[in-house]
Image (cartoon, rainbow, N blue to C red):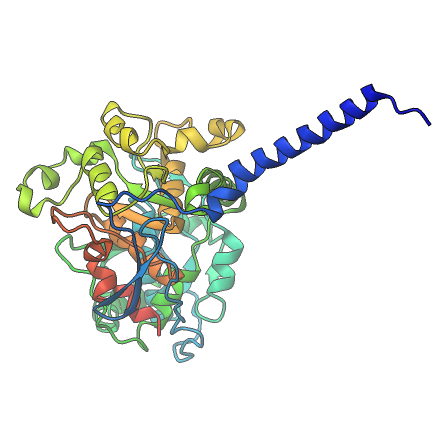
Amino acid sequence: MAVDLRQVMAAVLTFSMFIMLGNMIKRDHIDPFLEPLPVSPDVQYHALKVSKPGMVKLIETRYGPWMENNDSMNPCWTTPLSKGKVQSNGYIFFSLTHGPEYHASQLANAVAVAKHLGATLALPDIRGSKLGEKRRFGEIYDVNNFIRSLNGVVQVDKNPPAELSNGRLPIVRVPNRVSEDFIASKVEPVFKSKRNLKIVTYFNPSAVTKAKVDKSQNAYQCLAMFESLKLQTDLQELADSMVGTLRSMSQSSRGRFIAVDLRVEMLGKKSCRETDETSKQCQNAEEIGVFLEKIGFHTDTTIYLTQTGWHSSLNALRDVFPNTFTKEAIIPADEKAKFMDSESHEYEKFIDFYMCTVGDVFVPAFRSRFYASIVGKRIGDGNTQILLPAMNTTTSAADYISPYIAKKSHFAYSCFC
């Protein structure tokens, strides 16, 4: 049978094209996970592993200072205490205010008060940053999860009597992490007299987040803080899609990314201005870039910033780490109108909080309650690679691990065994 040379040549060319295509796919999508990144002789690459209080173990790695294994934590509230008063006809009302970094603590206080008094907890509303701005709880958080998580602890009413929720209630101010003694002496007398009241949590800015508390007495507050507040479905799916986008851009680091809490408006605040270079509490974009490069992160590393909208001052960071993004760059286009086009930026705060919680590394550009709250959530998830920039000259990432983690000094450690 005669052989058509044209057919043979066509087959050879087709086969060659498949080989070339296969090599391209291997080079672009497989090799980055198999081949080490080029290592400069003057850069040290380490990973962190916190094994025991006060001890940090270094593990050599070719991909930068990524923690390979996080410490898993077991909650101490697996079987909450059952003692307490029976449910009464009284209600405890409260609102979630000031942003997501405050919500878990406000909820923990409300649960502690309602449990001690045997009262019913009214589903809270969420107050925005502007006067009069208010959202329903279900616009941000999963109502069913909230009620389910507190089942057997306190009774939750999604629809308390309108005459109560819309009326003027006596208000009692309680300190963060309110004690049983405070409730008994300051809150209970008002509750016995009025049967319904609203509590407002106040925060002492000078208070340090300590871990030395009674774990048995603290069980209900821990459960409330770490189990009750989950994002509602649409917002959770949006945040997860943004995380997926960042991970898809992070092939050279095996899908890992750094979340940096860096907001330009924060850098101009008094707490940032009044610090000298040796004890600087805030870092700008350029300083964050120098810090991350100094401790060994490769320039291909993907970085998420909490800044809303791109600011020219961020260019210094992107010059070093080109894969630096704010939320506007990675949010799906069809979701922007719903979650981003708002003057209050309320949804964005919850997106940032979640992104900083799940990022493989968290770096706060300044010390704040946001930083402390993110640390607490990450401890609960066993995601403890949290690096605190400083003016040190050392290039070992282990020297910058947050004291909350290195010394196990964060309050969250009292909730996990």
